[in-house]
Length: 165
Image (cartoon, rainbow, N blue to C red; front, side, top):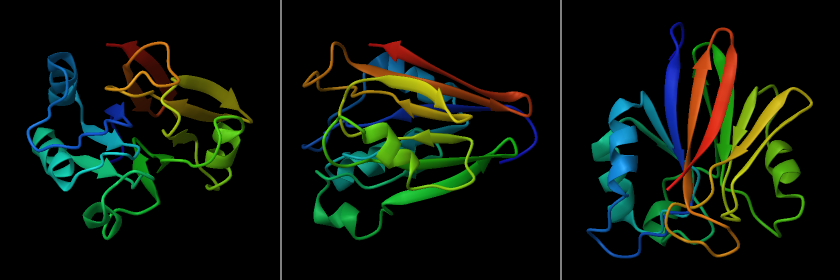
């Protein structure tokens, strides 16, 4: 994925435990207009991974709550290129304090780090690197609202926004 602008739907911590659980309609619509879907861990069930894969091109990492069927093939971290820019994705682990720094520390030479884990949306540019956590779509534990993210990647730079559901 290089050259033209790339639109990425970033989601995390969906915690789909039962087959048939679905994203909110507006998020499915956002998936339909995205070039890529990145899930930053805690899908929980293999059926959730299969469902998201039907919505579009999917990049996913494993989370701390994922069933063993997902742990067997999903990586802890992934690095990919979009519009000529290097981006990393990880779920994250540990306490919320310092989570962004720990996530960023797992990558070298990236322009953005997408992550999840604590359910609270977060966006900051630190040392020239975008640190972006969309929050959870389905669970308000430790979060003021449910949300997802849209990341626009182009030759000119990377823009990210959190979208409340």
